[in-house]
Image (cartoon, rainbow, N blue to C red; front, side, top):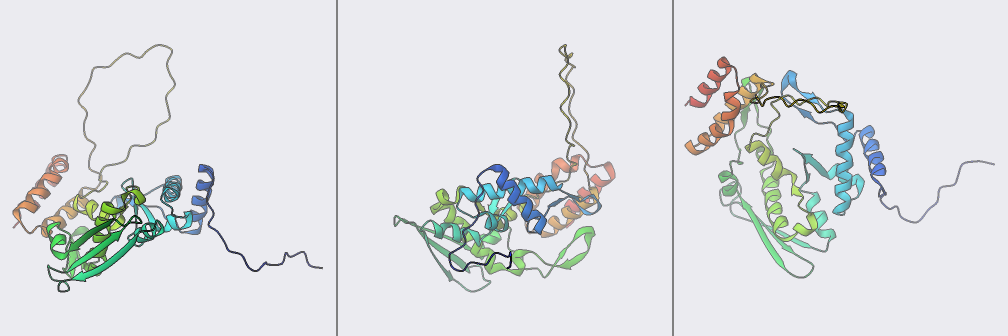
Amino acid sequence: MSNVTAMRAGGGLSPIYPQSVEDAYRLSKMAFQAGMLLPTKTGYGDNAVTEEPEATLARGTMLILQGMEIGVPPMQAVQLLAMIKGRITAHSEAVPGILLAHGCKIKTWWTGTEMADDWTCHKELTRPNGDVYAGSYSVADAKRAGLWDQSPTKQGFGGKTKPNDSAWFRNPKRMLNARALGNVGKDGGSDFLKGIAVREEIEDLARLENIRDVTPKPAMLDLPDIPDEPPQIAPEIESQDPPIADVEGFLAKLKEDRDLCESEAELAELIDGNSEIIDRLPAKAKAKAKAILEAD
């Protein structure tokens, strides 16, 4: 006689939905241990910092909980949702799945000459009640937004030239499609997406706005004991900004962005967006930054 339970045939498997925050955390921990949920890094070069496992598990838990709110099962949520600068986003392939699951219909077509300014991705979203919404995105739109990048090389960290690995260079059609999908999704399916943006769109905004962690993060402090007597109120002093964590990394990125400027307006926007950080640089580094911005 064998004690092994016989395997049963038939029936179907259903996704496991957590019934509490603790259940979601357990699923997040399993995904982390399996290598599906990876820790993120911030900073440059030797100053790069990998997040603690607790932060990775907390992020995974939030992705699972957000996925349940928009109808994405936990395992898919870990793979198709992402958190960028504290905002949960969905990969472009996840957005149609969410909309289609709610009864929407999506139609896609292209017009114009491939890689030319008029090359355009069109999307038509039909809601279950019959309302129709349209959205599109063209090469001309991408150029106006400063996204179009067809240079075969780019300047990497430390001023070294390397092959262009940007998504707009490697997969321009996919990026135009993602942008058009984001436009029609926000216009016609915002109640289904619950404000979830397309990941590719948020990553573009982060790159254009140069959202980078260049200052050290404060350490977590224990809560102090409450004194028996009220503390004396110290006179107010003017706060000082923390020093820049990676000066060389900032200068390298500044030069890369300066080389990409194609007009006076873009240069003025770059100067305005980095003036506060430049003012906090040491005198020698500040002079280098000004030289980079003034270079022809």
